[in-house]
Image (cartoon, rainbow, N blue to C red; front, side, top):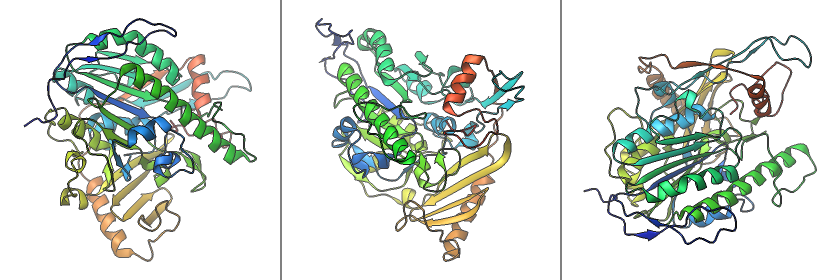
Length: 458
């Protein structure tokens, strides 16, 4: 029985209006099914939220929503940069299966100081057209589908608009600018006789960090000041998201999923931002789910971004296509104790470390207490129960645990992951786009360490 699909009663939903408008709100058309909203906050590490243990509450709106939500304490990304992680959320597949693994590949011949390069080539991986994603699957089930993305990688050229009735790629847009676009869309969304799906990909937390008043407080050293700026971006986004939620009336009848794609490093393992690696500060993500029938609770079971698709589909009363890697989290949302399907499960993450060295890969395997990282820096084992942020390598002390995880990782790596289509897409770079990439740190000219300087640091 599809407990999550039902006819909603007529409800008053506020119309998006320009500032100062006092028109009466429109009525939301009655419709079957549950409206679905997924908000992805790019680069948000959950331990910088007060309700995940931060020293102060940086996101009071999300904290309030969390009081009536299922909150996952051990949710993991499938990578540590945007494109493969978001593709996993869209498809329920690990990166090697959806094919989005190669990030920016920049070749800059640097003809001279203060001049543009003669050639600049960028090659990225595109979502395969043969794998229906979340928008396509919801659309086939009768949903009207809307999406807005502000990150460079989540663009139509890379296939992330597939299945959306309406999709806007707003490069460099703030959450306030996203809200303005939604105001234009609102009348059609609110009048729809069909349930709606809305995906928002917000980039305000991503570097280069802006100093948002009144939340930013200048600090005495560079690292602490960067963290203060990062936290102010969270607060700025949270305030903007609260306004959108109020104007669209995301109420208790809306299935509301808030997630991040990856985290951010602040020297925990010697690096800055998210240039490489798969440590906890990069791969642990926010996952919060609320909606009709979902019990408010904290869940400590290991889950992954690949689980968002099957969970969303089941809650919307839609069958999951065969062959996806993710599993539905509905049993956990119902408060059931985790079955062996969860407790015996190994989660994986993958990253190509440098775009100019495509052979350099790092893998992670997580099973409960133990996490194995195997890559360009060697092999490490961490005890997450006693060392959650991975400061002490336990490889030498726990060879049995390391061997078991390495065996599972070896089996996973040697499964057939290859796609039947070439997903590589060449992207032309003009001067405006190059400047934007340099601001984000996506162009590496070999000039030394800079903030967000990895070719794949998105």
